Length: 76
Image (cartoon, rainbow, N blue to C red; front, side, top):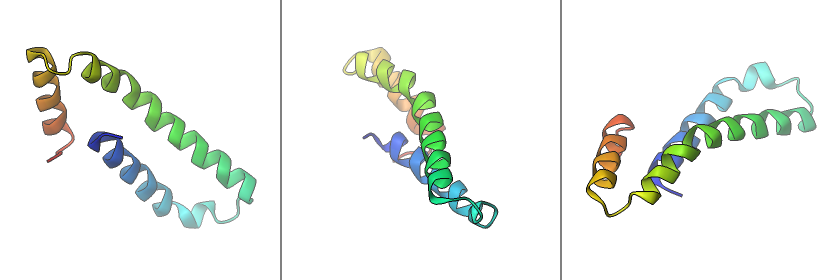
């Protein structure tokens, strides 16, 4: 898992936690569905950029992409 994936998951979990009071009445099954839904959204948003970064790794274009991702997501 790359650092942008980790950061995205941290944001997803923080938002899930922020809405915990509103989700308190959900059954465990419903809560699991909401968790799966939010995981799916994050994964779909990150999939294509991750694929492109891997495809272009080691090339000048890949280095530019990686630099841009680091800047956009404030990654070290």
